[in-house]
Structure formats: structure tokens, C-alpha cells
Length: 314
Image (cartoon, rainbow, N blue to C red; front, top):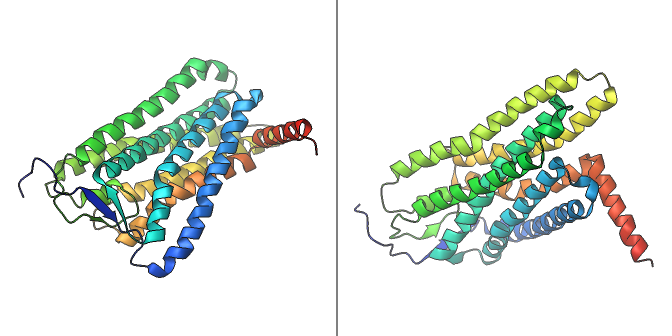
């Protein structure tokens, strides 16, 4: 079909889980609770790290950035998802779909690189403890954070602009609960082969390269931990890294299955479940994992709680 100058589609219809109407109500209730916990949990981490001076070190400042990304990521997806579940189907404007995809890619891409930067930080702290203050100084930390955010912006700008440069001349029903790239691309009435090659290559660079670097970092970290003479030191190092590795496995595992698959690889229902996992489960578990498994975070939370109780006695 010849490429048209502009699309005839002015809005899209998000189908969500309309083929499973019996699940709509239960799923709405579960996701509403999940969204509220995501907002509360990540807000607590952001505020705690901001107020507690002892946590103003790279490890926790990276975590604070991760929480900002998770809150933003959820705010882009979850409200729309809840509306779709409550109405079974929902229309979204062409511009609204563009904006949602843009910010989804921005925060998703930023999280990929942030998790990689956090792995490098743990590698430097555990494998090179004496030179760690020089390796991870303020300048290096700022460069890694700025690179992560800039990479997210670049990925979102290139990919979203390219997707919406294709003509959309009908049908306009997206078999999904938000404007994710693969289901939207299926509606384009043009040859998308070049974009699919770019998207696959880009996904390898954005998802797989950081993931492989994280795995290599943790292999080095594991050997360094095993060489530690102190059992207490080994336990503390394992505890610190286990939280990050859990988060990495959840996020990269489901994102890989979503974006590094052939079109016919999974059924639409399976694709929705995988998208649901990396867009809601990871932001939900990140604050729980980091705050419950990290002694410094627990101490900071208790200190802030006691400070609040002292300033507002009953």
C-alpha cells in the first residue's frame, strides 16, 4: 500500500481485557491497590533520601532517581489502564497515544540505563572499596545520571516520532491497554520492515547491552564477596546486591520477552500479561525490595518516623 501524507485515523480504541469481561472488575481492584502502593512506596523513598543527610551517597541517590522514574512510569500507564478496565473499551486521541508512547519509552529507557549504573556503583563499592570514593565521585555520579536520562529522551524521541510518521488509515483498535509500540505498529498501513530492524537493534543496545554488563558486574561482585574474610561482610554485601539483582531480573526479563520476540511469538493475551508485569510489578516491588532488605534505609525511615513523632506528640 502506498504511503499517505497523513493518517485518516484521529483516535484509537484501547481494547484492554475486553475479551475477558469477567476479569475486568477484579483486575481493576487489584491494579488500583498496586498503583496506590507504588505511589506511596516510591514517595517514601524519595522523601526519606531527600531529608536524611546520611543517605546522600551515590547508592541511595541512584535509588532516588529510580523511584522518580518508577513513579513517572506508573503515572503514564496506570491511570489509563484503570479507565480502560472500568469502561472495557476506551478511546484515546492520536496526540494522546503519541504522548503516552513517548513517556513510556523515555522512562523505560532511562530505567534500563539507571539499573546498569547502579550495578556499576555496586561493582566499584565491593570490588574496589579503597578507591571507591575516587571511582564514584560526584562528577561521575552526575554524568551517569544525566546519561541515563538523556538516553531515555533520545530513544523516546527517535522511536515515537518514527512510529507516528507511518500512516494509520484503519482499523483503529489497539489490542492492548495502553499505547505500546508493538500493538500500535500493527495498525500502520505501510511497510514497517526498516523500523522493525531499527527497533530490534535498538532494543539489543538499550536492553541487552546493559543487562549483559550488569550480569558481568555481578559475576565479579560474587567472586569478590566469596573472598571476603568476614561472614558479616559477606552477608551485608549479598543483601545489598540481592535487592538490585531481583529488580533487574524482573524488569529486564519481562521487557526482553515483550520487545525481543517475533510478531507471532506470543498470543495477544500473553503479551498483555508480560507488559503488565514490567509496567506495574517492577515499580511495585522496587521500594519494597530496597526498603525491606536494606538496613540503612530501615534506619533512616525509623529516624524520620521518630523525628515526626517528637515534633507532633499526641
